[in-house]
Amino acid sequence: MTGKALNVTDPLNEAAMILRQGGLVAFPTETVYGLGADAFNPLAVARIFEVKGRPRFDPLIVHVARLKDLDDLVHHLPLFGRLLASAFWPGPITMVVPKKDGVPDIVTAGLPTVAVRMPAHPVALQLIQLAQRPIAAPSANLFGHVSPTTAGHVHTQLEDKVDFILDGGPCRVGVESTIISLAHGNPPEILRPGGVSVEEIEEVVGSVRIPDLRGGPVQAPGMLSRHYSPSTPLKILKNHRDVSRGEGGRIGLLAFQSPPDKSRYQAVEVLSEKGDLQEAAANLFAALHRLDAARLDLILAEPVPKIGLGLAIMDRIERASTPWGEKGG
Ligand code: TXA
Ligand code: MG
Image (cartoon, rainbow, N blue to C red; front, side, top):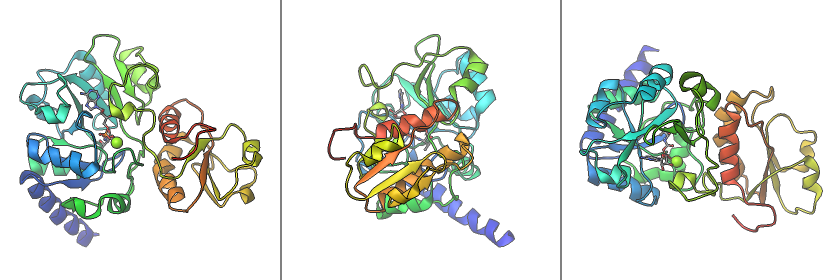
């Protein structure tokens, strides 16, 4: 055990040094792996966009290790922000708040707001503290693809394009943070469902707005309807009879609980045998990565209940899906 602990210290120091020198480090958080750069180094942040193939108009989340780190980023946290921070930070919730002028425009895509989050992962927190600066980081995947929940996923997608990959094991939560905007008055608005459920948030701040994220104008590309996508076409199963409706080729199933008949599928991933939504969220992206690697013609996904973490799971599955009748992926 001691040997292991010692081994972790060195990579962390090296990674922090790389960040301070303007490099890119992939690191674990409790939600998904992030691709980090010094938030106050615009050239380093620009490389994140290049490496991911991400459009410049899609702003990044800035990660902090202590509340004090917010001083460089925001004038003050509004009351609801302080309540949410004390209830859920460190943890999977990101707050969008008015930014300080010094926050580089490339981080916020020129918006007057900045998205801030304190992740609940010891490696992430130590990295930020050792680097001694806030870290801008999107998920460490190619733009539009499935987010990474293991260091192996990061290797497969970004390999030699990043300067360092810190391995902190599989991510505990497995879906990205909930994004809540506190920038446009009350009630606060959920911009992306995620690791903290709407029910939990409403216990702290009362009712929130949940706009229909896939209707109306695009506020940020994380909200584009097709996102988080495997390269294999994915369709949401209405019921298991859909399978017999002439879908040929190799079909895989993303099941919530155990499916009635596994034999129809070339590959089956079960998110949670006992129907636990937290377990399902933690397994979601790894299951999608495996199905995507199984040379399938089609992935069918069983819906999960849209309560608690189920809202975030269905949001990701819906964005990964190709509507019935539409070809390709
Ligand atoms: O769990 C997470 O949030 C992970 C880990 C690494 O922290 N990060 C993550 O980052 O999911 P990313 O870049 O994949 O998604 C961030 C989302 C994007 O959809 C972006 O548009 C939105 O946050 N965002 C960032 N700044 C914003 C702002 N000022 N206003 C509105 N949306 C913002
Ligand atoms: Mg992402």
